[in-house]
Length: 140
Image 1 (cartoon, rainbow, N blue to C red):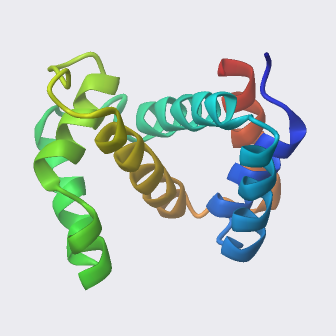
Image 2 (cartoon, rainbow, N blue to C red):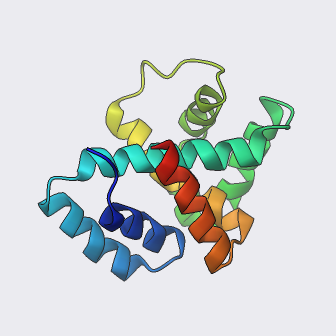
């Protein structure tokens, strides 16, 4: 089943910082049984964001530095992000390393948290966020 407009709208709301709208739409996605496709969209968006951020970076140093930076931004970020797991998920997305020992829940958590931070760092306006979401949807 392809990603639908409601799933895209839910993720877009999260990435735009409209958390109330995100929660409402995500509940509708879950009720409709669309979480698998939604997570496919999250994974595709994560791949797109990681590629945009780290495609020409010196690995793994750039990933380690970025994770340290985002963790230092707030106590909540520091608590929400396990640096070793975050670095490994990003590096695996870039074709390096292994995450087979991480639980599916840990991987999903990292995808969602790190995606929001990667997109926030880009400071995308509405049209740029729409273009990003269209690219992620196509990839998904």
